[in-house]
Length: 48
Image (cartoon, rainbow, N blue to C red; front, side, top):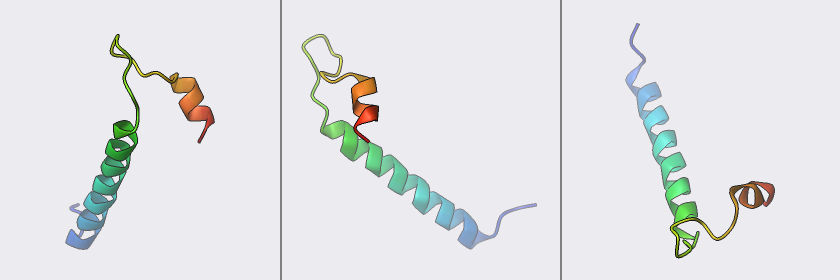
């Protein structure tokens, strides 16, 4: 059974918002010279 158009549209909007949130977050992370984040992943998770 296919989802109603409004439900699919709402799901797409939520997905885009989620992706944009991660893009914004990742833009604030500085890379080290070796190509890894300066902050550890664990440290980043504990701050949220």
